[in-house]
Image 1: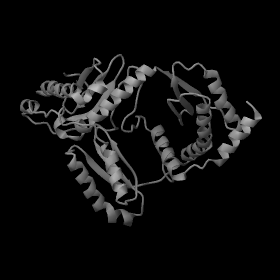
Image 2: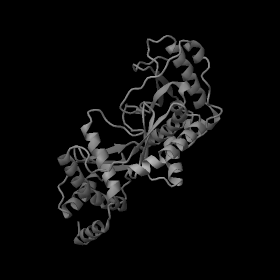
Image 3: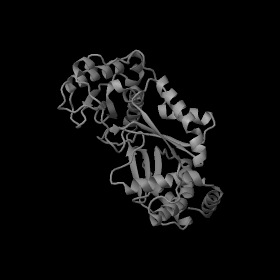
Image 4: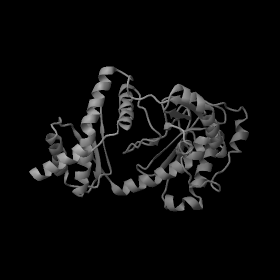
Length: 344
């Protein structure tokens, strides 16, 4: 590496400003995730290989089951004719509340309990003042989409300070500050050199740089040299680099079926009549759509309900509006009971 390049990189790093509030939110999330024995998931996490993608949270919910399930199963509504791609319910709520001027720091949702969490940035008096208005707007948005399966919780945004173990919080914050600026420059430098970075980020425990690139990329040695050189220039300890090579054909297929799942999940998760607590998909070895319902495998008529739900999903996948996404590919549909047994 030339001195000229080294000087350019140093200047770029010095000029970067890291927004404190956004950084604190990332740190807090990283710390919380590192302390939980079970993983904390956002709306969807993608696991490669043979593992499916799931929409879920930390708690298992339950639902009231009608004793006349046989009749219910025969009346599950088909959504193939009315279902169009639509925006995400969480995004819709966040955008609407911000558009109306409320100090919203974040809106998220946890599955399978289906609780929408709205965090407000402000004093207790401000939150008490706007709480009723925010509840009313949120209910109206949910009702407009006929999403009766969601609940929501409004709470005060708590920043990084004072959360968790003090020493671990301090170490995590120092780690984030140390690497955030440097990683922006690393990303720019690798992109400038023609690397197609499919994903790029770092984890705190263990400290690792995670990079995804196409499987056709051969310049692995140079990539690691660039990263390590920038670390050394800034007197930062080197951390392991985990490079994952990705099959781009499979990646394209994965992205399409991820979109399909997103479209389907809006109604399947949002409406009580479908009794779906989680959804998932896999494309290994071929596409598979998964729905996890609230009925147990031992429950009377649960199999009948699952078979009917499979027909609903299959009907949608074969509809005209999904033709360009499915592309004529063979697929499987699996319905899982509450005790995670395939029942269709």
